[in-house]
Image 1 (cartoon, rainbow, N blue to C red):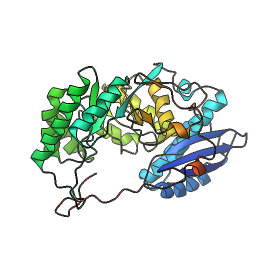
Image 2: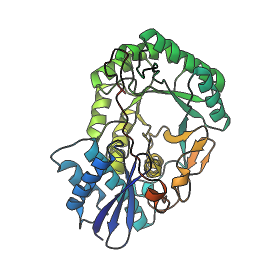
Image 3: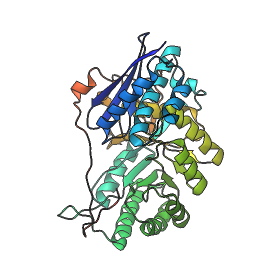
Image 4: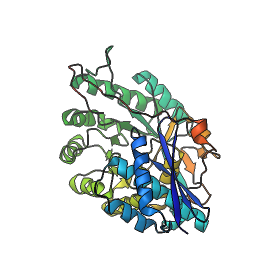
Length: 378
């Protein structure tokens, strides 16, 4: 069997799916994760196609090494393309052998996958109400974002004291609403300076946060200081693009949870390597998953076969999954868990003509400014 082509599929708000075609008619499905740079990733996919045409698609480790070690330049767009191809090759391999991907990666160590979902609202009272709804639906792990309030001019001017006080108020309201049998995590989206992150972490500690996600921008020395200073479990790494960055993070800091993104950090091949190194260090894995059904399916396959899996991010809000209309058979969610897909490969199928049903829009973000006109981290 030989690879005959790479087909990019742009769809929806920020999806880039990829199909790997073969001369035997088998097709593998992947997803690329450098959203906001989807069109650039398409160009990289077509360049990588030139390198792997005619290769045996079952040689996943060889192709992963060829694409990750023989390119002159590296970066998120390049790694996103590699990740999409790698996921598609694993999907194809599973279909070839008629087994789920996890069977090819050591077999499953759990029967279902615990997920966390997001509560969204504008203030503490609303956040508490949304979290309570999710808890009443059976979700055992809930995350909320600290948010980044803006003034009438769209600028962020919240000071140190206001930020810490406001977020503590949200956490207290959510904890009061859901009780102590539900895990509550906090998403910071790299929106604080180290001093703010340390003080907020100390203030939040009595509420037993599940994890404190991306409190500051990616800086290993600063992150080490934050983790030691705030004294609550930190989760980070969603923007890392290769296993070496996770090695540096786990070597340099006392991070408790890492967040590899299957669609950016190198696909399932990299995911397995990253999880294995984390396992021997006693670090647990919470895969990053902000995108579509293929990203979710790839995460589930990894979650199924690694002992140090913690919980899975799931793109769902207020009890409604935004992926269901994009798949022929939706994921089965029950009492805060997803049942493992039983089909071969990734175990899912996209709807036909997804790029026509959900035309590509692109998602490009913007520039966030402080009230003084300077750029703030997001």
